[in-house]
Length: 266
Image (cartoon, rainbow, N blue to C red; front, side, top):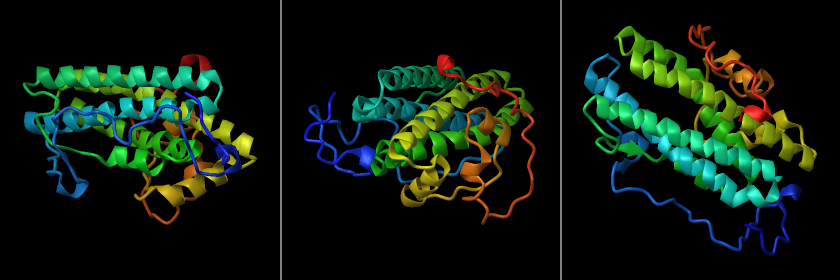
């Protein structure tokens, strides 16, 4: 796919995009799950009942389902403006997200449910729509904010499953955590590539993209070790989060997936 009529080029910080083949604003989706606004989503309990575990795994499965679309939309929308290795890497990421979804969907069925049995929200795709004009905006928000948040919360989620003896679900999440470190690393690396072309400081450019396009709050605690393994160092996120007072929090499961990522491992 090639850009057409690109009088405005993202390398120059401009935002006008045209394509020979139209990229849909929204991917095709099944009839279920029902998609609700985030503020209408039922509250999930924090206990270890089967119903609560199903609700949590269903939410995680939906995240992985949307992550498949996010990876492939990134390739289709922006791939022609990067080296071929960009497309190769993000196609692998999309395949891994699909594998994560299959693992979680199988687990739902093992617990007597299925994907689509509960409602889900569309917040992740709203981030895609917000960043459809600029590859650096997309890389800054999706892998470097949203997926990085998964590095922060997954260790505690693993512990919750382990505390109720659900080692199967915990094992699935350990595998996902290892892969997501590499996915965040891919976002950091390609964001840096784009910043080098534009002549921008990656940390400063990331701060600007987050301020412009992230509607949520970037708040601690952060899984610093897993983020560092992905190349997302404190110079990126610490300044943004300084306004949020917090107590230090230990990440006992954060050793999982902390081998530094390389281009050959993604």
